[in-house]
Amino acid sequence: MGPVAKIVRAFFIALLVLLTVIYILFGYADKPIAELKEKYATPPSAFILVDGMDVHYRDEGNKADSLPLVLIHGTGASLHTFDAWVTALKKEKRVIRLDIPAFGLTGPFPDRQYSIEHYVVFMNQFLVGMGIKKCIMGGNSLGGQIAWNYTVQFPEMVQKLILIDAAGYPLQSESVPIGFTIARTPVLNKLMPFITPRFMVKMSVKNVYADHSKVNKALVNRYFDLTLRKGNRQALIDRLNLATDSNAVAFIKNIQQPTLILWGEQDLLIPVAYATRFHNDLPNDTLVVLKNVGHVPMEESPMESLAPLLAFLKK
Image 1 (cartoon, helix red, strand yellow):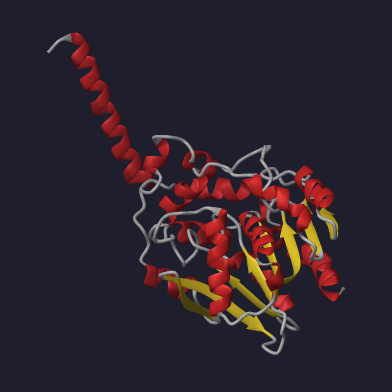
Image 2 (image 1 turned 90 degrees about the vertical axis):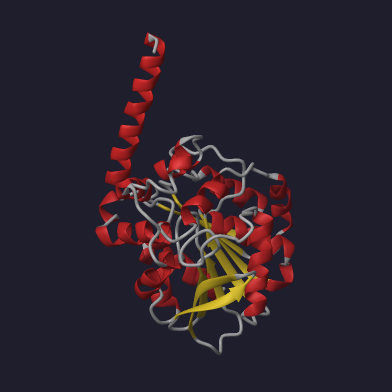
């Protein structure tokens, strides 16, 4: 064996040893769905079959409310991100929230297609399945992008719209969660379905919070556990590697529904300048910017972000 071949062989042996050590330290198998349901699908959680998926949802509050509030979470999150809001809202409103495909207990789309158009069709199937004729729809980040696209496609279904640090415009972030970066990085993203350090999830959550002291153990455990739901890690990679299609933003100006734009001033993922873009394009909106708050206001500062929502709902 020549010297070059020996060097190459030694390199690959070292690489194999390194990967083995990393897997031993940070490798995690998928968590059993039954175990996750026992922890995260406690009452009033329920499941409904939509497009071949058992979709995890919660339907709470005033069942006589003919105009329910439907809440959609963002990338990497789950319906639990709205827990504090729902505790207050369900006293008077009917509130429906769900784990959208790729995240939470619902898991991946069977066809692994994560376009916004597919999410819009899914949301319509879900609402029809729930017997919803009209609603107030709100969403955070990816959930906001789904919500405004749904409103464009099914305007008769939406009475009011709530955009919480919503995605949709061509984006230039000031900072991106490390988990998102790895999911978009060739080679590294091949390892992500098997090697997912808990500290990576913790760093990713901290990235979307302005006040890192609020990122506690229970919060990180929830994000980490649901990341390990079978199929979710690959689904995150599939979703984040889609080519960006921004053609739909031309239709934002056509949205006539009263819209609340709610934004964290310290959002580094979708900076507050994008709130201004929505404000300029939407013909019938209210813009509220929350100081010292990041990308997930309803989770990081629930009471502060709830006040403008309640005022908007009463209009």
